[in-house]
Amino acid sequence: MPFGWQGGGHFTIIARFNLKGRLKKAEYILMITVNTLQKMKAEGEKIAMLTAYESSFAALMDNAGIDVLLVGDSLGMTVQGRKSTLPVSLRDMCYHTENVARGTENAMIVSDLPFGAYQQSKEQAFAAAAELMAAGAHMVKLEGGVWMAETTEFLQMRGIPVCAHIGLTPQSVFAFGGYKVQGRGDKAEALLADAKAHDQAGAAIVLMECVPAELAKKVTETVSCPTIGIGAGVDCDGQVLVMHDMLGIFPGKTAKFVKNFMQGKDSIQAAVEAYVHEVKAKTFPAAEHSFA
Image 1: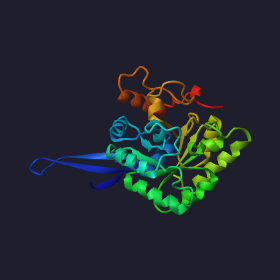
Image 2: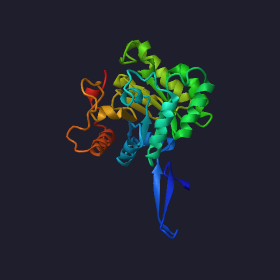
Image 3: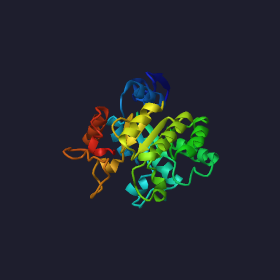
Image 4: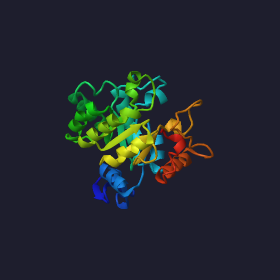
């Protein structure tokens, strides 16, 4: 497929031919890039992100207007039925990234570097990230604060965009002693320092999880790259939820930041479209989904 550039993002020209080999139709499909996300931040347009793990849901979300698809290691819990994300392997992540890539035309694909695949050294991180990029990712996500900024810089200098995940980082859940809000009180400055370090290292996105809304707002106003929040208030540059959570697939108690978008909808497509609309309109997350 030939590629080009238009309005801050790349586009793909898809040529369709008739049975005689003559050009019947050419379609221009705008693809979300890091430049697109930066432009959205500058213009105040919110970024809508959801997790996806296979091609059919990826295609549905892509058609519904999702800007970024996250192939999250959350698949360990949502797809594999595990108790945490820790057992997920690089092989698992590559497999699901390949599947999501097959169903995606417009959205950017971000894939998680799984636990144990990048913490040992920058070189280990590059080798793992290269496999995810070859599988179809456009960006990789790693977890950690200031101490991981050097890895962020190492990857981005070698052509791999990085989403830096700070705040509550699920791969460290046992070190945290559970799923708890991060950055409260005297720990706020440390979280701000984490964001600044990754931003200065060249991170394309800073993702904040379970962070007080006012602190997340301060981070968003401080860093130059777009911020994505999950349980981090409405003032982040974008929002992300786990697909299974926003569709109400898991019964019982859910996290404070979760909203079931399937309620009152007659299709998954309608639920995803409602999510996109509420993120763009800044009506989600509401105060009830945020932390003080």
